[in-house]
Figure 1 (cartoon, rainbow, N blue to C red):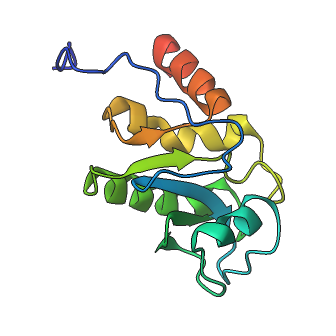
Figure 2 (tube, rainbow, N blue to C red; figure 1 turned 135 degrees about the vertical axis):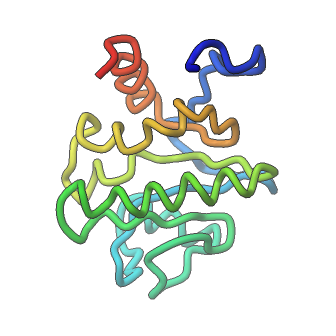
Length: 146
């Protein structure tokens, strides 16, 4: 039964800002990391100002959430994204601002990474805000039923 779930905000676009330079108390900066937690460049370096812990490559750290993207192909990132989606669902009072994880230093394209976040829209996880380019890819996928 995949008809209309509810009249809540299912059609609401939840887009994270292109550039995040401040966070409200309930906001979490979601960034791509490496498994060793060496947050030296890109969004990972920015995350350090909000509590990303040197040496911790996965999960909640201060007002940040690390998703490893440097350990192999897209298939190695998916379990960490799935873990993040589950975490966000169980922490509904927090607002997760997802950056274009994996699309900088890790070298993936938005077309490769965005589909990993498909369940954020399919399950209407209201506290996850995706980058606009991820959102556009995902909504095109949804309308073409891939």
